[in-house]
Length: 306
Image (cartoon, rainbow, N blue to C red; front, side, top):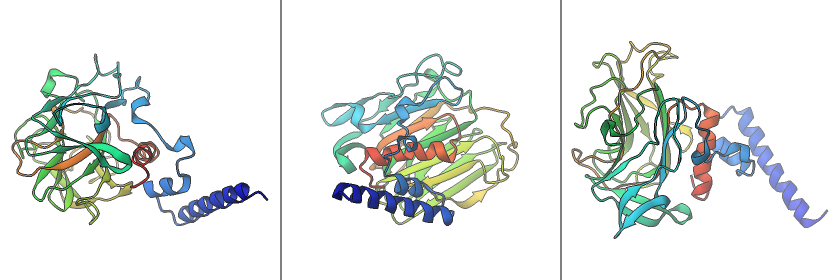
């Protein structure tokens, strides 16, 4: 047998063995998909920029730090790489503005990719209702590649109806934060006195590049706790800190009321200096297969280091 054929057979045999073993153990995570395929099977990878748009659950916004306008080392403009919009819910493409002067860092991430450093005043924001917002849907998934480094409370992502902080006042308000050690997701239910806080804890979060996925919806299809989910590097990582959300219906009957969708920090928080390399939002609660394919894209883009 030719040496190349032997190597190919051994490699695929090893991957199949890992796949079979993980399947037998019923380990369901993004790690499984990343290991078994090495992403040579393109059915296991999805570039967020080319996801179909003519659906009411289409992607809302996608950016990465390799496609920003930079002047003098600071980001001055952000582009929505989707290049299109959902005609069922929007009349034009979603856009964001750059607030303050987030710093551009070339070759800051694996595979020589760029990142953005957000201090306590830096934000990428939809600027209230001046541009399309997710007001016609009741689900969302946010995936970002980030490096949390702040030693005090800081915000990585907001989907809120007000700018005040730490106010969570409107049904569906969502804040994804870092407290110096953990990722905390704060979500407001119905009525506004019902809130939930969930936490992702892992020693590999602080000062490490991670793929962070947060899902939210205005419903409780599987009872209390099923309105939020959190994944770190494809692994479900969710601990309940508190949850008083009980009155959301099993099937959503209302839609988001969000004036502000933001990546970065806020001038009303104390922490900063977190880095984000990419951010993706879609107007749906992605199933595991859809989520895995997008996460696998980021694994490939950043050189298989997650």
